[in-house]
Image (cartoon, rainbow, N blue to C red; front, top):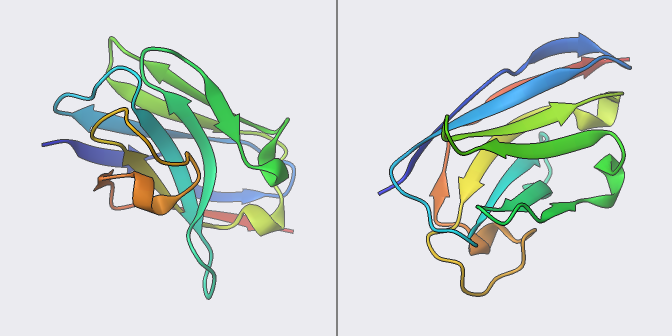
Length: 126
């Protein structure tokens, strides 16, 4: 069983930066996806960025390309999301997600992931 605990959310003005962290308990498999999703009020949960565990391949949603960076620290068993040049539309609850095995699924589909954190709120004021 994998448990995910996010931290690092907060309130920031547009143009500012935040770094989200997700501490992983339990074992994840090399090649499986880990990702950050977000959900704004009244909207569906959407994939923001993903990384292949141990491989390092990264994937980003178009709205965040060039502004967000996903990374992993295997020694600390922590996933990060560095968010720069934040915009009002980045506001939402951010969730960490992990896939249980490296077989199949699109990185941006919520159904690909088996484990989810509780979320951390990001609020960007314009």
